[in-house]
Image (tube, rainbow, N blue to C red; front, side):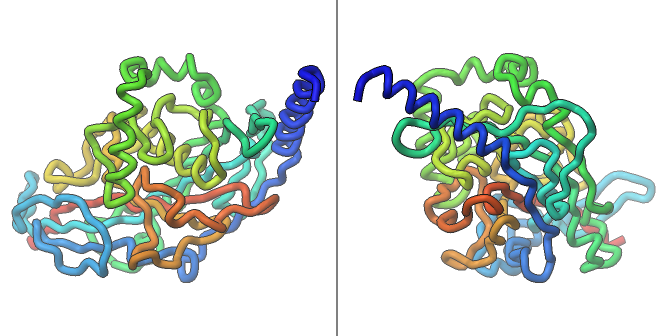
Length: 335
């Protein structure tokens, strides 16, 4: 094949990938709390450093003392409880303003936003991609009224907290440096090579919080936008986007810290996300409720090769939704 013909084939395939993304329709579904949520992800439950019930689930370090006290009038004294609270939801979508978690509703606010795109190689899968994402508040345990008057649950209802379509930083690697200028420090082979250790740690348990610029086996957290430099598949790319959006919410002080001794009396500002404080569960296109080694939730950075097979399919299965379980430590007052 002549060089000119090769370049023409590459151009046609690239345009086909873009046109396919533009022709995509908005798909999704509401989360069914009975069939689409893996409730064992709430565990382990702990009092201080002692685990009360785990059901084989993974956990991070809890405050050492079982007794806690919080200032106030009157002061609150109680038990230091730990659990994983389902409280946030993330969409990763090809279509702007496509609300996957709201049943596939497509908004049309008249605001121009970039379409999803995949740049294809001559042979093989897409080498890079771009997605939009949405961040929801979804305190499932509260609005289901599972535990009435339990002070450690976030109170509220399902709501849209953030749309990347209206954020000019989401589509521009240079503009997003205004939000994360520290990315320049890690844009080198040595810093990126360290992410291999984060990948191994996340696959065996949780990632390494010291390597906050690493997204484990998915790549790099930076830049905090929708461009995926290495696209290996929709599940891998969407997990990377979900971690980036969560990190972005922390950097913009929309998401706070709810774990550790500092959170016993209330959440605290955490501009650099601790990725070990989150577990994710896919709820669309195929709810990941089948347990692998007794677990169906994945910490940020875990390889999708272990659980992502068959979770993506053409047309209706190329947008994604994830329920976030965040680590919650709380002083439940006895009096």
